[in-house]
Image (tube, rainbow, N blue to C red; front, side, top):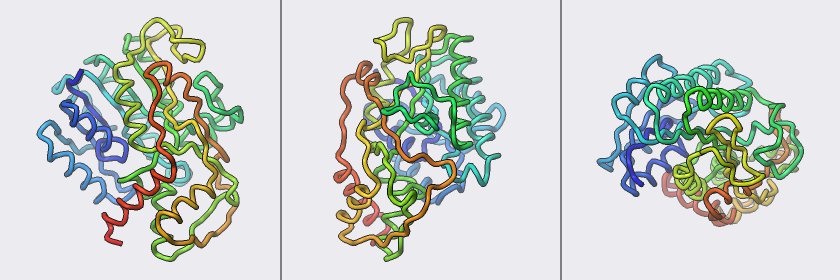
Length: 334
């Protein structure tokens, strides 16, 4: 089914891995990335450089929210599929720099939607987050659960993009799938995420900050498992008929939201133990209270995604962490 795909955030953690996978399957990939300095730009540049080794990849550097930039690229490239991953990420950073979330997540997504309206793809897929479930304590999180009480501005902007995309899907008959990601990790991961920070600190002999005194659970999703889900969902174009009672398919638009998670929450201290095992070192721990905007647990209900595309691989947390630590040691020479 290979064709042309436009990937926003192609130098990001998920965008890089997805682009690699699509290129390996014969897709032509046009990647756009703003190269923001939210974390080390050298890591992003290295990812793009690796993708550029494949002649099927073309990179454009520019801010998503630049008026008309995305529209011009889409008009010229005419993609069969758009995968919109670019965003200002981070729960805690959204407290310090909320304007960047308005610009990248709201205005940037508007630019993508306008481009898709003018040049409709076969399928448009956009990244959301499990953080939209917010104060909902009913777990595992199902796509049909209420997600009305976001606890961070980051989550609020991502919930807004779900609503924006739904309106465009309804008004312009744009087949649209929203992803809700659950704590993605793996090689080439983001330096602001816990696995990267913990590994760096442990290998440097520094203490790690453990929030809520370690009483937290996350549905850690290994990057290869996530990418497998996205690639399979490209062919699962929303239509008029739901696949079952668990389907989040809109009654008025070719639009649905889909969880992509491992479906098995891991205790934070077990996660730390996996890093200790992979590094061969014990972590010095600063036990701290919960951070503003954070939630104590996430857990994905995988019923819908499995109804759409079948069972996904579920990499064991110890294997996934071991792969990340091996990459980290090799990349940083430690």
